[in-house]
Amino acid sequence: MMHFLPLIGIAIVVIGFVLRFNPLLVVTVAALATGIAAGFDLVKVVAALGKAFNDNRYVSVIWIVLPVIGLLERYGLQQRARTLIAGLKGATTGKLLLAYLGIRQITAALGLTSVAGHAQTVRPLVAPMAEAAAEQQTGNLDDATREKVKSYAAATDNVGLFFGEDIFIAIASILLIKGTFETYGIELAPLQLSVWAIPTAILAFLIHGARLMLLDRTLRRMAQPEPVAVTEMAP
Image (cartoon, rainbow, N blue to C red; front, side, top):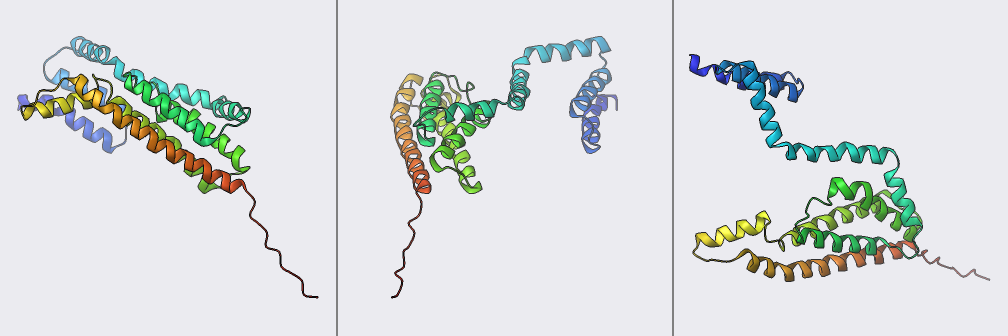
């Protein structure tokens, strides 16, 4: 029976989640209970928790970005982005997103996949700027068009990252492809796979770029007033 005591941590996690207690508190208590039940003293258990956190602290650093972006948005980050675009003559939604697509692909190709993203750049910067450019083109956006512009901003980030990261030789997808080929006896260097990813990235840029230009065309049509039908009055 004593051999099953360390499993008490599982019961604590299940009960804590069912009762909707703070997840961090539940996991910490479960870890402490498991360590003590396994025969370790409290100091050693706390030391093990501290070492695990220190060894994996880079995982937790990512979450610091979210409150920072929240504070920036609270103090007018999106409004500043809109004001910046409003002051640029000739700025359109398509051109703006096309420029972002190029930047996203180049940085991803260099391995800087976390430099931009939906949380870091699209929501607080790119989408508001795209909306502001669309408002300049059409004068006023209805809800459906506004959501469409937002979706194009998110899609641009996806396309840039997905087709740009494969050019970087140390990315997980390249290593996965290399390992798959090796299982079939085909030896390929990561550089060979990366080189062949370049044409795909160029085609993705051209295809999605064409879609962005079509979006500009649609917005320009929305800005043009509809012709008014003139009816002749009978004498």
